[in-house]
Image (cartoon, rainbow over all chains, first blue to last red; front, side, top):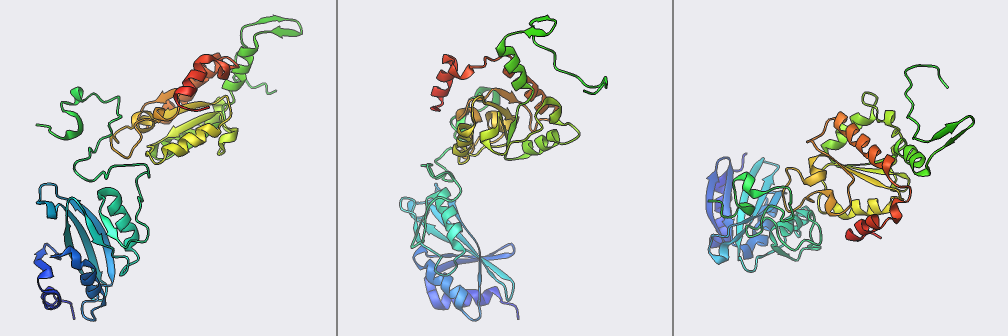
Amino acid sequence: MALETSVIEEKLTDKFGDKVTGYIQLKDIFSFEVDSASMADVMGFLKEDPLLRFNFLTDVCGVHYPDNSVDRQFAVVYHMHNWYDNVRIRFKCFLNGEQPEIETATNHFLSANWQERETYDFYGIIFKGHPQLKRILNMDEMVSFPMRKEFPLEDGGRTDKDDRFFGRKPDNVNNN
Amino acid sequence: MSNSKDIKLVDAPPGVEGSGFFATQLDTVVGMARANSLWPLPFATSCCGIEFMATMASHYDVARFGSERMSFSPRQADMLLVMGTIAKKMAPILRQVYEQMAEPRWVIAVGACASSGGVFDTYSVLQGIDKVIPVDVYVPGCPPRPEQILDGIMRLQDIVRSESVRRRNSPEYQELMASYNIT
């Protein structure tokens, strides 16, 4: 028996009410939004419930939305997979732009350890309760969180590329 | 010694020759010896390293230029060949490898990434290895063909051949090292 998305929606609404919102089927993946304070509870429920059985955390990543209102400027995206019925879901938790903090998922999935470190490394999102929240890919001395939009993508130390010859201004910021 | 006409010998440096003796400058003899037995230390991080593997192998055969002995320890190497993108996280390691090499030592930056950062104009990539260590020869290309790498080695041989035996004591060299904070 396949797990229907209507069943997932019903069970989550029964259990969490308005903490889980915005149910939508986007192409082939069922998506919704979770209140960031309830993230760990929802994830635990999705994993442990005998019907839902989302036993695998496929991915954790961040998104920066600098144009959103201040309490929705960061998002953490979780992808989960039910291996028994082969159903995937995705949910987002929006975080405050000034103080992006969310509970760690490592209590439910040890695999979240590196994924959360990577998200911290690139977005500066703090995962509360993470066993070792430090940079994983970038060099330890780095002070910026490079995937945040305010940090330039390009290296300032480039000497052989004169922007005039490329018909543009530096850093691709205001290029019009 | 073989009688084969195919064997090419290095020309003797200019000097005074008579029966049973040959007099010349020490610098030129040592330079000639060094230039024709450069021990390479391949520091390969990406596709330029694959090109260097072809350069090492039988078809292009860097051994023809006296560099058949790859040294995978920096202690016994003369010529550091940096081939590929160097991430900023890798920069201190590259610097440590350079510092472990004994004098005299030379560096070739092979390919666009090692020379200038190449297409990787980004926060995580070192924009040319000359930001952390001095470079003697730059080989352009993305990646360069083995012929270009060989040409780079031959250009370095020219440098080595004409250099003073005691280059490391010269004020210019010490100033260069000081500018990189290498003692």
